[in-house]
Structures are given as structure tokens and as C-alpha cells.
Image 1 (cartoon, protein in one colour):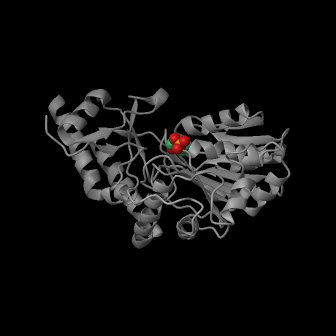
Image 2: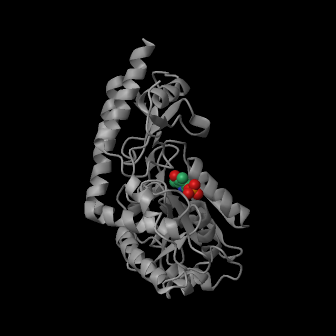
Image 3: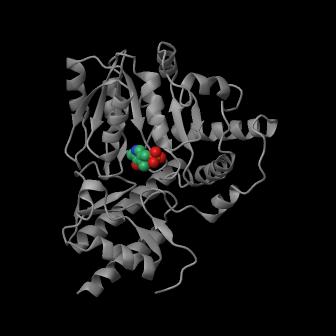
Length: 364
Ligand SMILES: *Cc1c(COP(=O)(O)O)cnc(C)c1O
């Protein structure tokens, strides 16, 4: 067994975080009602708006992304309202479950795991029933499918009273997303995926239309009430105590991302996706996700060679120094995921892929 400085994460969240970003968290604490905090908030706000391609606003939440799922549903779906969820993977199905848990009427367009939703499916559903909102997952991390969010947005936007909610937890800052151009009313994300931050902070770009809707709803809850968050945001602040250390890290990471260039960052992810596909297909593995909709940030490998994913994971930890994914939920083992997201470089990806090669060579 080799010795490593630390076990690097090659997981589809939480991802490996660079030392510089970890260290940004160790700056001295400041009071969140101070002018220094307002400066930090405003600085970060400006950078986040650029990252989401929005002119509206980005809420910063001391929670993981799941909290903002609940916020979107409570602020956007009327008490007796109906919501359409596009489901076909662990995360899209859990979001629908959260809408039900909040007492909303939920319809789903369920596709088989590994398949994408199309604009035609959504157009058909909206022609038959009125919905307060359509909820879509941009990048379904369990299956490695990226949904055609722009095309779906065009369809949803033809319906005046229907808002468009997008979970881009594992898409944001790894693959194309333009919130304003694509007519998205909320794009929510977590920190620990392609943003490459530690977990514990979440972000949502929210439209004026969604705030108008929220104003017409009584029971929005408190912690994820967007009107409460908005009142504070206008003062460069948060209603309750914010995760200041994580905001330092986010501010530092946004500088690095803007220096790389957001479109260049998307291109780096696409290149890593292509290299991963080539590697998998050359070895005789399959690709689990439907052709044409394969994710730029995570490849779900169909384990057609039947490798023992637990043995592979153990080998990678002890001999190569990486914690590996072994597939999600119902498709664990039949698939495993290669998350080429965040600050992963082509060199790091090649190190991981060579490690899996070494594992497979040992089996023969
Ligand atoms: C990880 C993930 C979530 C859950 O995010 P948390 O930050 O763990 O709450 C939701 N949606 C997708 C697509 C994810 O990948």
C-alpha cells in the first residue's frame, strides 16, 4: 500500500477542492452586520451573476442544494397549485418527492433512467394541463444525462403563467447554462459539484417573475422564503447568519473561474468528457446515458465488462490515492461514474483512467 498526502476525491460530489480554496476559509471571521461583510456579499453577488448569466439576483444559502429545492416549490407553487416534474433519475425523483411533501399536486413525465426529456414531451404535457411550474434537472448526476434545458425553456415560456425551475447542481460551471437567455425562473445549485467548493453553501439565480409569484403565496415557510432573502439581499446581507468561511472560499474560487473564463471552463469539461468516452469505449465498456445527451461533467460507465467496482474502488484508494464512485442506488455496480467536474484537469483524469487500467490488468 502506497502512502498519499491525502485521499483525493474522484466523486460526483463532494469533489476535490484545491488547497488555495480550502485556505481561503481560514481568514479571520467578520460580523455579518459589518460593512466588511456587505463588501464581501456585494463582490460575490457581482461574480455569481456573471456565472449564471443573469442580470437579476443570486441568493446565497447556508444549506446544501436540497434546501433550495424546497424554497423553489414553496415560493413558486400555489397552495392548490399543480407542478410538472421531469423525472428519470435519483435527483429528479427526489425533487418531485419534496413537492409532494410540501402538499403540492405533482405530475411527472417519467422517463427510463439514462434517457433525456425532450421539448416535445413537455409541449405535449402543457397542452393538456395548466401548471404553476415545470421542474427540470439540468444534469442528472445519477445517470449522467444532460437535459436540453434551452429547448425545454422555449416551450415553457410559451405558457404565460408557468414558471421554469431548473436544478443545475452538477451542471453549473461545468456545462453551458444561460439563465436569462433560456428563460429560467430559478437555477439552483450546490457548492460541492462543478463549482469545486466544500459542501454547505448553495446558490440560486431567481427571476422577478418568481418573486411576483411568491408575493401571491401565503405559506412560504421562513428559511428558504425568497421574499425574506430578497429584503436582505437589497442590503447586501442575509436574514440569518451566513456561512462566512464558505463565502470567502466562493469569492476566491469565482476569481479563479473568471480568470479561466466561464466558456473555457465549459470547454475543458467537454474535452474531459470526450477523453473519458474514448477511454471507456476503447476498453469495451458502454456508456449508460442516451447518445446526444451525455453529460459534460459526469460519465456513467455501463459496466459491460463486469468489473468488481468494490475491488476497483479499494485498489484506487490504496494504490492510486483516489476515492472512487461505484454507481448510484439501483444502478450501483451495473454502472460506475467518472466525474470529470470542477477543477479536475486532463492530467488528473488520465491518472485516474490509467489507475483503472492497472486494476483491470491485475485481474487478468
Ligand atoms: C448532488 C445533487 C443534488 C443534491 O444536492 P445537495 O447539495 O446534496 O443537497 C441535487 N441535484 C443534483 C442533480 C445533484 O447532483
